[in-house]
Length: 161
Ligand SMILES: CC(C)(COP(=O)(O)OP(=O)(O)OC[C@H]1O[C@@H](n2cnc3c(N)ncnc32)[C@H](O)[C@@H]1OP(=O)(O)O)[C@@H](O)C(=O)NCCC(=O)NCCS
Image (tube, rainbow, N blue to C red):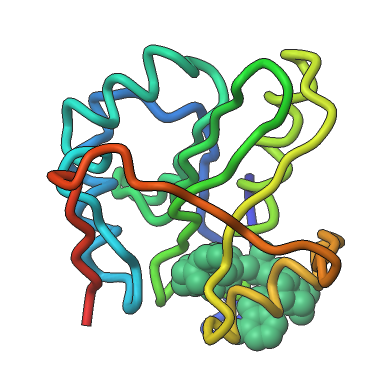
């Protein structure tokens, strides 16, 4: 993807491709810069992400610029519904269409696997995230409540400051 940089009007190449486990270190480093992200001790470890990618080898995404990972989406499905986790773009690359392009890439990958619906969780206080999903056409569901149940207490979530 070639995209005009809106601040200094130079052109730079941003490439969007499938995430591989070799991307883990850079993706994790990016996650750690995102305020409010909850990083899980097991699910977000290298082993946890490798397990996720083995199960969903073609649906997660990275955005690369100058050899650096500047965006990522963990995306998978259970055979029926797709799910996005940890959608992020590095702060200095935001508002250039990269988040939308990554989401479209992952949604097309889900469609190839015959998945007909995709969902995600956004914290209510995440103003930027909620504005983003509404603006790229996702439906905010007011008619349902979200339930979960912890199956492993060792999978501790630590939120970035
Ligand atoms: C949400 C996020 C991934 C968006 O990435 P991005 O590359 O900046 O998004 P895009 O440039 O593709 O934006 C697409 C549209 O979303 C909307 N949007 C994006 N950021 C916005 C913001 N800060 N305020 C209002 N609208 C915004 C705009 O309508 C934008 O279109 P426009 O630029 O033509 O107006 C990025 O802001 C991010 O990493 N945020 C922190 C992590 C996070 O909150 N993730 C979502 C978890 S649910």
